[in-house]
Length: 182
Figure (cartoon, rainbow, N blue to C red):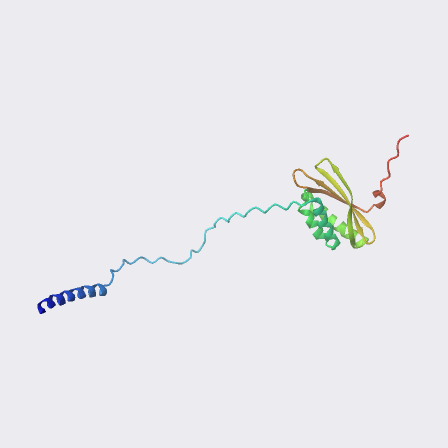
């Protein structure tokens, strides 16, 4: 039995030495890579700006909504805000700042003279075909009323405000019927 034990021990010793060699050996060294500088460049390239999505179209408001928003702002004594609400709906917005400033100033003077706005009412609606409309409103002030005429044009599927007139000539509001010719 001893004879057989020696070769097994010798064989085990060879295996142990081989395994020990594997454990102790280090992996081969990798080639040294050159170091890359991580410094930012002095000047960055001008990159194109991402395209901004187009502004969503303004909501389609009816003449009732346009006028109600306008008069509600006047009732709250916010003349500039009232005219700003019309700006988005006004087809002739490029008429000029002088005319717009004049309308605002005229409206403020009228509200100061005729008292705070108590309310408003539609007194007349006239249509010329399917594309033109005039709405006449009475704006009730605490002292006196004002007449407002809003002119709308509908070229396709949306009404646009094209003109606005204000007056306080109360006697002219009541038109006398034409007398028949004799």
